[in-house]
Length: 265
Image 1 (cartoon, rainbow, N blue to C red):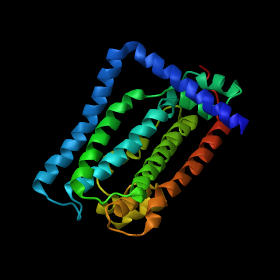
Image 2: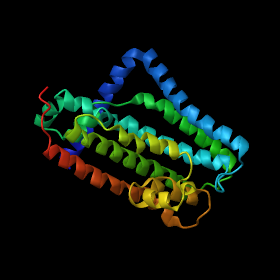
Image 3: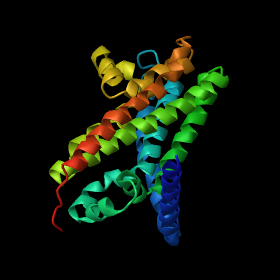
Image 4: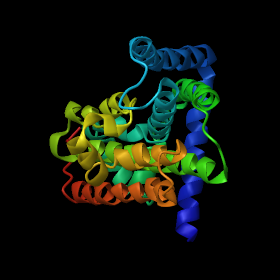
């Protein structure tokens, strides 16, 4: 227990150092955050213009789709903010920096996580919050404590799933040195097709995103409960079940660490 508390404190110290470094160049920070806001704004415009022509997508209205997209964008942005170190892990391996990480007494995952904290993703989160507030106002959802709790569970589960994907993305570098861009299909790609409820893509896609990479557990099923399309209260806990995805991701990381060979840099 003491080691876990020490690890949390160390990570918080890493985050504090990263934030102080970023804020040394405040203009650059705010411009980058604004740029992140604009990047996700183009995705919002795609949804907006599509609903100018079609009133519903597989029974989901514009405001309901915005709720779906807003939550998915927040999940992805939170994972990017906290797990950015895994996204740049190929540079850590190629430079030989991971050799130094391994000889330190602290957990290597905490050290990699703490190597980068991308606070500028706040721009995306801000837009997601704005879309979510608009969706709440227009969707007519009867909010209660259980539905608010469901949204919190979605954010926790979604952040865990995307962090697991970033962890797998990093672990592949133990065998390839270079990061594999194909993994972007499951990270950035998921953010894009997650704009709409997973059910609109067909039964096979829904099965894949339920049992293999659990996007549907953090998006589609709890959304049905929030929108009142299902009264099954078990759906609100499915995002927490999605956290299981971290287990195979961590096992793959441990497998990669055992087979790591220095790049010789």
